[in-house]
Every structure is written in C-alpha cells, then in structure tokens.
Length: 54
Image 1 (cartoon, helix red, strand yellow):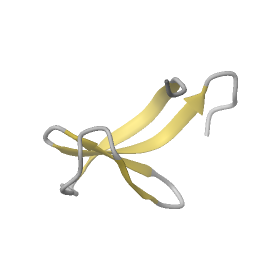
Image 2 (cartoon, helix red, strand yellow):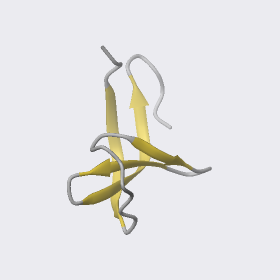
Image 3 (cartoon, helix red, strand yellow):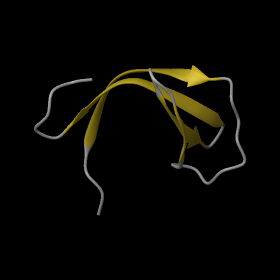
C-alpha cells in the first residue's frame, strides 16, 4: 500500500481533468494537483510520515 501523508494546506482547483479519482495529474513548483469526484484539489503544503512539512 502507499505511504500516508498529512495535508496541511490545500485549495479547490478550477481544473477538471478526465482522470480517475485520486490520480495525481499535475505537479508544479508550488503544488500537487489531485483529481477528485467533483473536479480537483491543489495540495500546497503536505508532510510525509516522519518527515518535515513542505
């Protein structure tokens, strides 16, 4: 199974890609974009288990 992460800051994205829900569809210098049921979410600050927030 995958690794757990904490999401510290996120916002709703205006993008609505034709992807499977839960798919990371774009990575930029300041965010990771994930497909949701109704569109997508932009992850701005995340933290992997045992690591510092970024």
